[in-house]
Length: 378
Image (tube, rainbow, N blue to C red):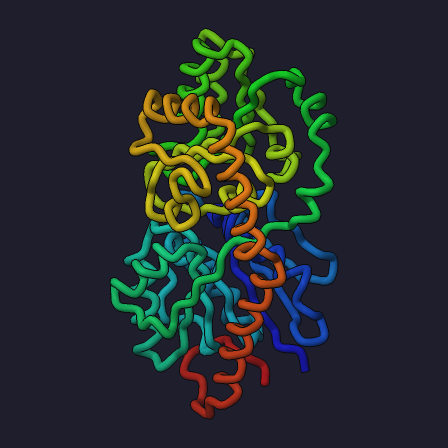
């Protein structure tokens, strides 16, 4: 009998977690796993839903976290399932020990709300219930262990990159569609969660570089938290013609194919899925040296690091990297080699299968009667 997995996501779930979830929804064998999704609000469009997966959607409640938790409890009490997977939910929704007697897996991709994650673990433990964690960066894994979660309950599973999508991306077509001159120096950025960095800062960096390189252009993907601020700044600055707002119709492989350099102006550790895609796509990377970034980018070896996220510092580092083509070539080659080893979809899928097997085997061997509502169906 297929094990029933219940996934819970909401509109604040980061893109990196949604990309992992999309992989599981499409690649887990239906003969072994039945999958259902509870969606609180509208997650980012990166989440791809196959037709055979059941979806229950409820309106998002942005202003009252407690109401979001109540919605979760209601579903847990009436949905039979064998394993609960919560995708970056615990940092934003105050779910505690109530609601499910089945084992649970919490996926954590950013450092926000780590205290909430630990509180949930303690509540589950006090009820004699299993809780395990998947972290998308090692810095997050270390933080969970530091706050008191046992190391054997925490698993690192890195980003997954579709190499076929990268190979199929058409640079010339994408530049034409985005209105980018064939000889332009094209920078791409992506917005990490949080206010200190992201697209807004990248706009300032591009404006500075435009004073040196009149042919510079910058692509800004859509659908991010700072998108509106960045768009307003780009339209009001003295060089609005250099920006291309790509919207949500293009994925990382497409935008990287149209770009000459990837700029990651992150001021705090956050999901690094875009870095993984840039490494695999062979696009030079200039980033700030936060802990999660340094897990993947070594200065002068797999990319170029700036000491801080101030616009002039980043602009200077970008210019230095651009003017050293040999260093860029070495970094691209080494980054692409590491990307193949780290970010293959099958490696990511196998890691999840191992975690799911362990949790389901432990559940099958647990003869304790459920103490809370909801939970498995036999």
